[in-house]
Amino acid sequence: MILSGKNILVMGLARTGVACCRFLAKRGAKVVATDMRDEKALQAVLAELDGLGIRFVLGRHDEADFITSALIVVSPGVPMDHPLLLLAKDAGGEIVSEIELASRFIDVPLVAITGTNGKTTTTTICGELFKASGFATYVGGNIGDPLIELVESGEKTERVVVEISSFQMEWINSFRPRVAALLNISEDHLDRYAAYQDYIDAKLRIFENQTADDFAVLNADDPLVWRCAEGLKARVFPFSRKTELAEGIFCLQDEIVYRREGREERFPIAGFRLQGVHNLENIMAALACSLLLGCDPAKSLACVRDFGALHHRMEFVRAVRGVSYYEDSKATNVGSVVKSLESFENITLIAGGKDKGGAYAPLVPLVRERVRHLVLIGEAAQRMAAELAGLTDIRFAGSMEEAVQLAAEVTASGGTVLMSPACSSFDMFRDYEDRAKAFIAAVMKL
Image (cartoon, one colour):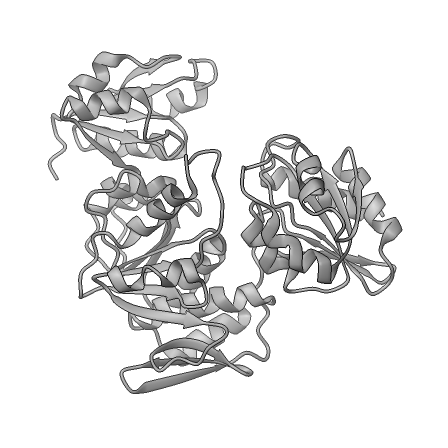
């Protein structure tokens, strides 16, 4: 892809946009960067990009830039129906996401992992599995480091593993993973998408450009995921926590079993540091992706055994007077909380935050069976209480500290206090990490 001398517009100057600007400018493109924030808010960004010949349009967007650019690179936060993007499309400009741009410069096998929940854990494990088998590996995408930073660095790699969000797939054209994994689908981001099906369709684009030479790793236990298997061009490789498979990877009593083309590998679960039923699914998906691309089974088992929990996902904080406290701040949607509740009994659940528009009904059976007390916080508290009324003892708190204190008062020895919000954090906190810190601080004060 020739970039030198090309008029390219970068829309949005968060980390991904900054990385794209740097890469494009160094490749000789005529770069215009635009963001609705002003110079004062972007002072650090301007300093970082100083001297690269980039023209900045800040505090506004200029229509002329969108019409005259041959290529527009869009940050994930910008919706597809933005009027200026529609105008640019009508004018014949090509619009791409950062992962689309980066993928055009990558020529080693790429694993792309998406799903409503478990993406970060699965991507991280998969990267560790490749490294354990001796492959030079880059891990990035939605998980932290933009994929374009790999291309810019010129780092030599043999495997690339990326976490991909639905937003990142909205503007792909040729993005083609050698292995694409879809972990699960449940309602999320309905504040961004007009309909649930639009969100599902965005997720499914991960398979769009695959061929019969590629693999699609699918959750056979998720009806929405499994429904898409028939229409795929890639070779389907399923994983299941509930069913034995003739070909695929599955749980059989106390083992994970990998079967492919007459070969069978077994991975005893005993001794795994990573606990929870949802993590068994994440481990199976990661093993499938890595074994399909040449990882060593014995080294893979050792790697999986030693892998610990990620920050802010079912993370044990401490035990106080016989009660265990777990922080699960990354559980920002209902599907993620379902998996968390499946891992405990006798739960006091702290939930709530900024409502994302999905239904809380999928929580009903588990709240009825496993949640003894429900402490609600944030903007979504009243709607959650209405949808879960009559299932358990429901209480309200005005802050995270108050919620933890209340949970400590009502939870008997042997119980579990789980902060698993089912909502985003932006009503009360800067982000999910800030929310996690508030929970941990309150627990440490007990």
